[in-house]
Length: 132
Image (cartoon, rainbow, N blue to C red; front, side):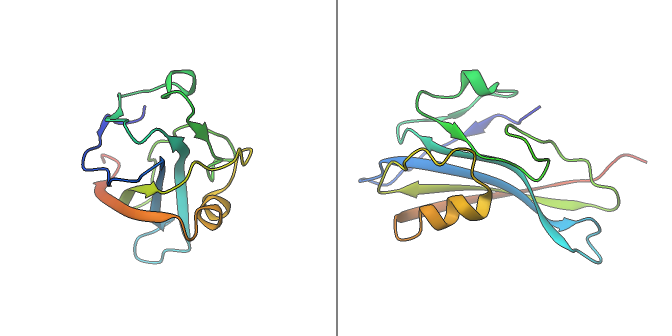
């Protein structure tokens, strides 16, 4: 289930927010080969103060659109590292525009779409390792 997130300090002039959650340590932190994307959301309203734990796609703030993850689907894809302790980055982007409907963009397509529109970004990093 997705973690609860709280947002604050959105800059003046922000028209929307975009969230990307990724793990740059996949599959093995000692030999990473892919920056695995766990969640992509865009067009969150700038007044959004966060997301509740286990938020369902149909319960996202009005206007929020999902992107596709490296699990080849939309929605939260939780951590399940095959080996070692991985870092998970939650990156919130404040944009000076509301993006057109991009369908279900990948992280790369979303970031290309908001290039030149970034006002600020905030980043939170957490770690996870399977219990032995």
